[in-house]
Image (tube, rainbow, N blue to C red; front, side, top):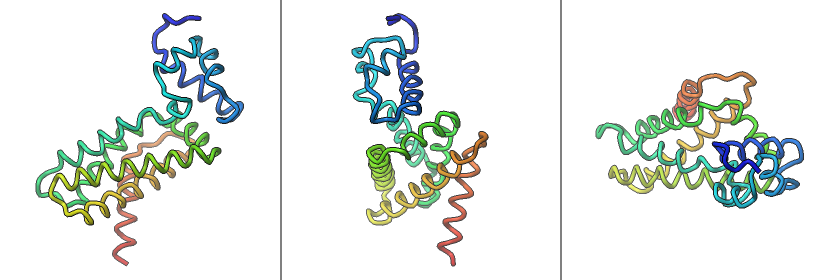
Length: 187
């Protein structure tokens, strides 16, 4: 096995994605992923806790981008303005890999366990955003409401983005979706 080749994590991710598409998530084993990537199963576990983590490994980066954007928002920013800045940061993180995101979402959509994990991830992101808003002295219920609204915008914009066959910029789509939400609230 070619354990000395660089970017084992990337090769494992690509191998896993290919196998999940070819065979399905549930039918794919860690041993098969490792073999396809040219590494051992032990190497797989150095990079990922389990085969689901291949699809969710970037969650911490996304959470950090969201919370740092809220923390860095101007002191005069309203809670929703701070959330809007967080959504821009999320678009910068998520918007770099359209083809990967489309494949990943297709795999998640095909598996109930993975859909549940995605919902848990979104809930965790909302809680982190609400915590960042509370750190800005936004009262608890308002912080939670703004954060949850932000996650709804993120989910809807992301779903629209991955449904397009050709890469587009996620940032304008995120902003348009936030504007759509605001328009609905003003009706």
